[in-house]
Length: 439
Image 1 (cartoon, rainbow, N blue to C red):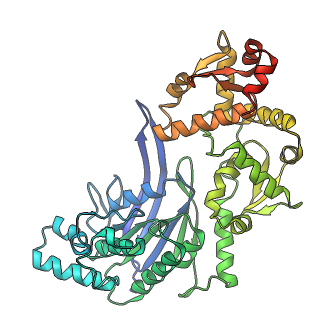
Image 2 (cartoon, rainbow, N blue to C red):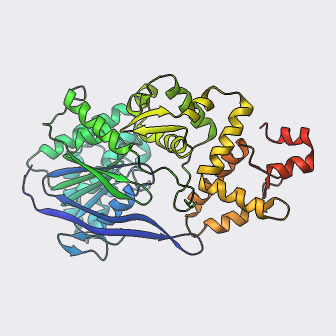
Image 3 (cartoon, helix red, strand yellow):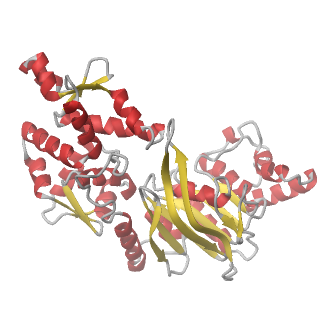
């Protein structure tokens, strides 16, 4: 590849906000600065919800703002091609017609469209499938069509949003290898590649530079240059060292422990169930000196990204501490791991009310109401300016899961009203009150 240092895309001090449900805004990206230089592959790594895909769409010009070769974008970036996780093929079009879509939109003549499309199809290894429809192709072949469609316009930058995550392991590995082989060819038209991923090994395998995004809101918290020749040996000590370093960056102490004054919007609840956290605490508790999250994820055949919501929940509640990717149980975590059901519920409820802002807000609201009850819609309306609809539902579901387990409050039979536990017990009697929390 050409090793020139020209910047193809520049992201300068980008902050991106979206409107929240029925008013207000929530911030997805905050003051992000990033360049994509000619001759390099850059991986953007981050937790779910860190704004990775939003940042990629900013670079594509699908969402303002960013700049292309120093000029601010006011529309779609003419110099990029995009590959999506979900393939995004038109099912009624053949492989060749799907590949020609971008050329057709640019007004390229039919004969020239066909020539360029057939060339791209051949390069990506689909020669002979030009007249096939997407339904006739495997997942790997459909993603190849996505690559061909992105490359047919010979873009300066190829942007890929988790392009291998919907594929089986073997197909994904083969496609990664083929993309790297294409990148190494002197006649490969694309001058820079940016791939969004949550897979750390994928980032180390493919990228020259890895950028790690922090969350709430998205910001660059770490950057690493991968100084390894290709092809890269996954089993080498150097490869493992890069993986460990990025695990530490991804699983560090951010977000900070929740203070008493934290707000539900400023410190949202992670999407972690009580049962999920109990399983994590049990696994980490088997090791007297704690457990590296990288090793734990590997043992379970999961990505560390899958563990992070549970880790965040355990850290928020003070059940676990994480330092440079190494998790250890706190004294409360050890008590929760070994206690009986009643003791565990009491401990969990105390920690949730003290350290989980939304749970605390619900408890405070119920305490201040005349009869110890409030409609769920009251809390939904309070949150709607801070969270989009899907995240709002997840916040309430998590808070209610934690509150019910900790016997702080419960839901009435209609599912529309929350009731403080002491009020519920007083109204229903001791036996009925206990049964309501045995679910």
